[in-house]
Length: 128
Image 1 (cartoon, rainbow, N blue to C red):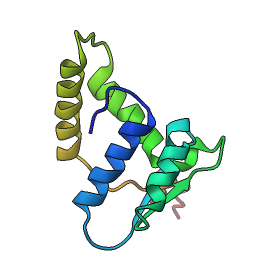
Image 2: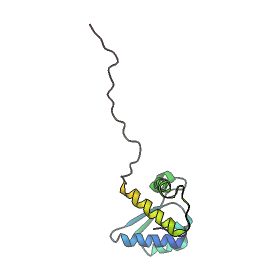
Image 3: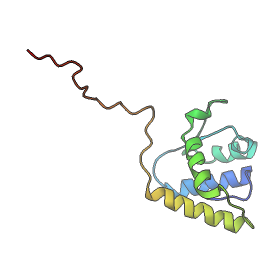
Image 4: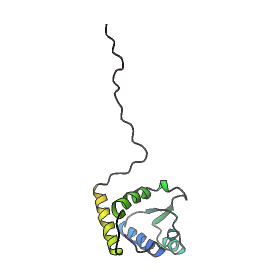
């Protein structure tokens, strides 16, 4: 979902769409501490929708949020070097980049991969 502004109304519209797209079970939404995520109107809206649990990442711990890494990849794919005439073009670039990124998506793995085991050649050769 693209939004014209980062305000409480659009945050609530996103939450409503997420709730409608996931009719069964609970929904956990992990966000940063943007004021629209924690405004009085958003908190009131969340009280009326108990299936949605809102969890904030700690202040200053953006490395805990996988969306930070996704945003870096997304900005590079969709927005880098672009100039847009208006919101419809931004929306089109967003949808196109998301579709392209989804075609080559792989599960995100935390940490470094395990190093491969190498076979060391013999250093010394003895002959009799």
